[in-house]
Amino acid sequence: MDKLPKIGPYQLVSPVLLAPMAGITDRPFRQLVMKMGAGLATSEMITSKVELWNSRKTQQRLLLPDDNEPRSIQIVGNDPELMAQAAKLNAQQGAQIIDINMGCPAKKVCKKAAGSALMRDEKLIAEILDAVVKAVNIPVTLKTRTGWTEDKKNALSIAKIAEDCGIQAIAIHGRTGASRFTGTAEYDTVAEVKSKINIPVFANGDITTPKQAKVVLEYTGCDAIMVGRGSQGQPWLLGEISYFLKTGQLKKELSVLEKGKIAQNHIRQIHDHYGERIGVRIARKHLAWYAEKALASVADFEQSKQNSHSFVQSFHTLTTADDQNKFIENIIKNIEPPKGAAA
Ligand SMILES: Cc1cc2nc3c(=O)[nH]c(=O)nc-3n(C[C@H](O)[C@H](O)[C@H](O)COP(=O)(O)O)c2cc1C
Image (cartoon, rainbow, N blue to C red; front, side, top):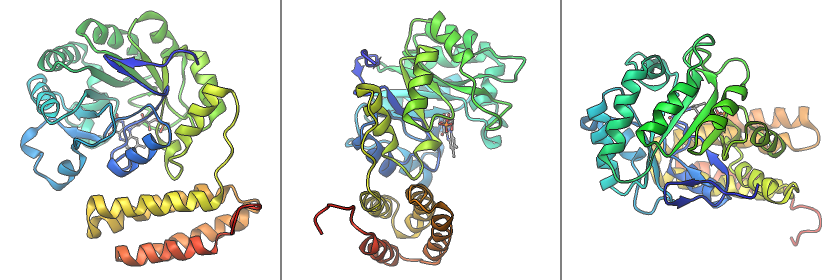
């Protein structure tokens, strides 16, 4: 990969981007993934209804001045004026890129004809994109799917509208809105869009390994790839993919001990970000993913699956940050250092 993508004035350091995932790609996770080599980590979506921003949930999703650059935040909604207002406020609060969610299939979002349900109404799409682009003087990007249903794959038409409205990059998840997360992602539609528009296009969907990332990049001709669920429990994955795309070599795998230390630090950051009551709950799902991914690399897989299960169950019973930290500390003490490493 010789040319790194640019979004407006922002030159990305890697063509491997973290897909926004509500409830997962919060500030601690984004910081970790960026530190380990990703090119961009957009925040979880926030509603365009500014009067709801006082909720704890949205407050914790808003960007902070020391978030990793370029600071990109995603907004969701279906009213051009509200979307424009939300974009403007985020820009005033330090966002450097506004991303528009037109890909989320969640019932709560689609019921209000937002997220991927917007793909059914191209006139409204144009109105929203136009209003948001005109409201801010920072780049606006779009995240969408291949279409609303299998027989209405209108990603190309939407991409052309986006380009005409001044959108500066578009990410496409290779599924339709109706298919939600079933089946497998297809990249033909993504490749077609890439070949017919001039703004950067990012391919997304089911990318979980460095080799697969390379295949998708070459097949689609896209400017970058975006990784979502593959990063759960392995925030180092995006850095590993970046390394492979740059050098053609697989990066030396982290030891279980190194992975454990990353998890330990991540869990502490979660406690700090959310406070103890919520943080302890959020830490549980991340720890379960770490257990699954880190132990999956241990030779005796069946055995490790059982270990990971009881390990996760024990962790779930802990109700304080202190107990969770002590539990992880104890696990780490019991992980053997890699052969040849200093004790
Ligand atoms: C739990 C979860 C939450 C998600 N939240 C968002 C979101 O807030 N905004 C968005 O555009 N897409 C969201 N997505 C979709 C992802 O960004 C991505 O497009 C999708 O997971 C496909 O990529 P993957 O196969 O690499 O996971 C979410 C996906 C999951 C699994």
